[in-house]
Image (cartoon, rainbow, N blue to C red; front, side, top):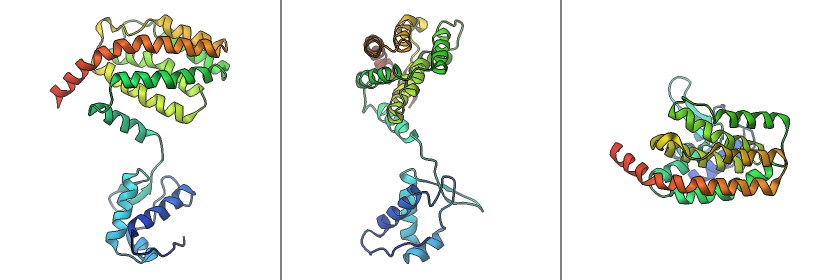
Length: 242
């Protein structure tokens, strides 16, 4: 690969941008090692300190992973939405986001997800949604299994909507809600009635876009009030474990 000479000002950023372009264009594929520090030093005609700074910047951005050992070096990372998940979770854990804000965002996002899902129903999605509804009636579950089952309908709908960004945002919000429910076990495990999810699912299976939106809004508004009540207990528990 040929690299262009970089001016002295902002040298590291110039290297970062060229390597980033090479990754995004597919010249370096996921799992492939980028040139070594020595090779990059020769290509760019800069010191190893500058190259090391540039590679570290790529690592911070999640574009490469640094491996140690004989076969170590900087390898192109598999880009996913995990960074979004982790960022929102960190903001929630350090009290920069409230449950009320999470619920408000869920209502906006998941009403649109429900509408889109109602336009993309097929036999496979219908089967999975029915199985997820049936699983909510299971008894003698662990708390973790209970939480998993209560979120499954929402996860399937996010997948159905066909918009990867909406799905990623919804996934991040579901992870935050799961964190809350796993830490603070609601009395009798009651967060919402199975019928609330059933109303959403059956509207979607019928292709009723407006009905799906309204059922989702009603459900999340109701469950949101209960989740907001759990936030104080969650914050207290977290402080005790720190």
